[in-house]
Image (cartoon, rainbow, N blue to C red; front, side, top):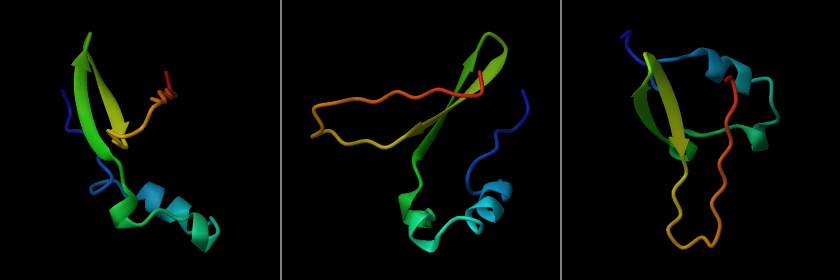
Length: 64
């Protein structure tokens, strides 16, 4: 399995951020917790923003 791309190793997303308004740009401290899961020969990339006090969970998937 190839090595995973993370927010720290991938630079394209940072270039795209420069096109967004300053107040909408993610900062280093705003990055999600990244996890990787091997499933049926594919590597699933999970981004998590944990909030144990929240009443709700939101799950969004894309690029499937």
